Image 1 (spheres, rainbow, N blue to C red):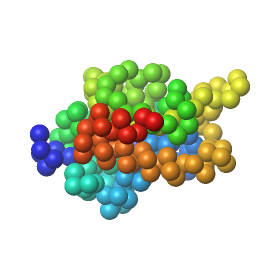
Image 2: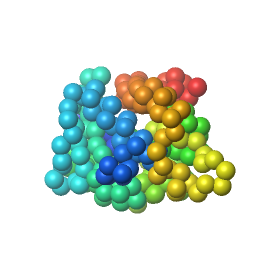
Image 3: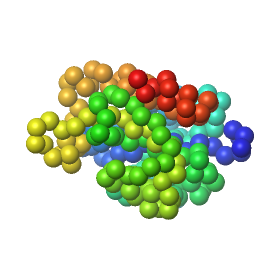
Image 4: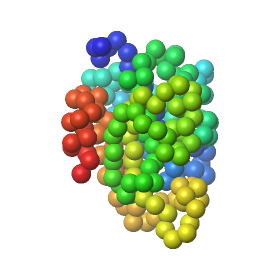
Amino acid sequence: MTGDSAPWLIVGLGNPGPEYAATRHNVGFLVADELAGRAGGRFTAHKRARAMVVEGRVQGERVVVAKPMLYMNESGGPVKGLLDFYKVPLERLIVIHDELDIPFAALRLKFGGGDNGHNGLKSIRKSTATGDWFRLRVGIGRPPGRQEPVEYVLKPWSSVERKELPLTITDAADSIELLMAQGLELAQNRYHA
């Protein structure tokens, strides 16, 4: 399949609304914002898919960068709508999400797999009837002490994390560019430090 036959659909997961903007759960939106800037576009509402989208090119590849505008656990509907509208095969879908099980700022790229209790992934898996698509897992680390994971992911970044976050977002966007241009193995070798 050539680069022009179908775009890549890159979906950053998060929750809509200003009260969630600075939370760990919205790291997917932050990476999507970075990629949208690289594609030279501004997000506009996609009327049929309940998502904000930017269409453009990143490193010569056609991309649709998207942020579903429903809550995380309902992301599957907008993702399925965008896949159908843009005629994107599942092997050109990349979902960016927060991951509790890896340290803050660590990145893990993979193809396929389960949802590991992540409600956004669970919803997309249900709507696509498979888990066979790319994921970029952005580490947010485990909650301290006895804090519940649900509470932790909806809390703002710590001051220390906020300082390191811009570099993490840049690395995450770079890893997606490398994945699209040169494949999963090379991107994993470079970014799974």
